Amino acid sequence: MTVSAELELQSFVLLRLGERRFAVSANQIAELVAPSRVFRFPHRTSKLEGVILRRGRIVPVCDVSEMLLGKRLTSRRFYLIAVRNYGTLKEWIAVPVTGECELINSEMMAASESDAPHVAGWLSHDGDVIEVLNLDTLTPGPEQPPAHAVAPQVVEARP
Amino acid sequence: MRLAAPVKPSSGKTEQIILFRVSGQLFAVSSASVQEVRSADSMSGAAMEISAPGIRKVRHVVRRGDRSLFIVNGAMHFGLHAAEGALLFVLRKTRTALLIDGIDKMTTMTRLQALPLSFCHEERQWYRGLTALDQTVVPVVKPEGFLSPEELALLDAALLQSDNSAAAALQETNSAQ
Figure 1 (tube, rainbow over the protein chains, first blue to last red):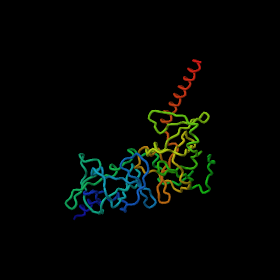
Figure 2: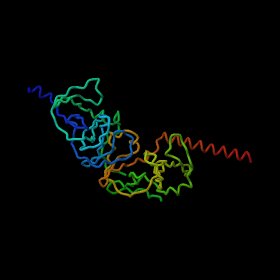
Figure 3: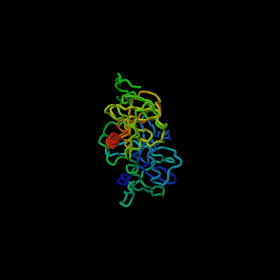
Figure 4: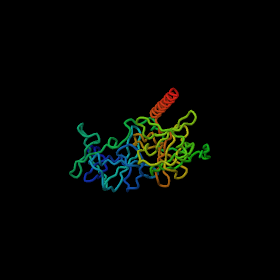
């Protein structure tokens, strides 16, 4: 492999949802954690199940399976903690997955205009062609991040 | 029960909160935001019925001098299973009296985390944020989030209409006599 070819390689995390595999850029992944208690409370945002507590942070759980597979996952083995961009802001989200994840290096083919908005690109691995997910379009969030969102995400409680 | 005016904690880094339930769901509110806690029964005598289009969560209003307090059914506000509220929180600096199931306890929160940006609908008006207490996550409600300015305008209009109807009926009765 030449140096120029190596430069084309990027790291991806392969995740499994049901029978299918998808990829997310490794830069966007914080960690893979075992399922923990999901805290639910009333809200009106679809695709959000609730939140989990992870290292003192409150992380929303976004189930993307319905959008990608057309059905909800019946079992989940891990939460993939990923970084979701909201304009210039970044926050963690937890994506339930059904199997082990794998770190690979591969070349990504850019998405075409005919691809769905959640497809960031394509990669070929082990004879499969795998969608690289754009989590920013796949998971809920304000179309325009609110101006007040630039405030610190954790504040000390003040009466 | 009238709550004492909030005392500023010495540390300045914590906040006294009241944990309460609506349809079994746990919420928190700053104790500084709660002016009074009343039993729903104690208010029922003073409450008048009100009906504003599209605002099913408000069925009653209480007149206090020149002020009107709208009784918001917490379960309907949050889209939970309807429950008979037993207590009312009169919320400071608002025109809301919130109907709840009951109080769990008073406690202190040290950190309030902003609602994650993934939550992008009405809940952003409902909650100041989330707090973790004893390995549980509790949403902290925003007292001014129970009635929007638009809803208040509709309720005021319904109240005015009701007053006008009552005045007209009284006038008609007087004329007949």
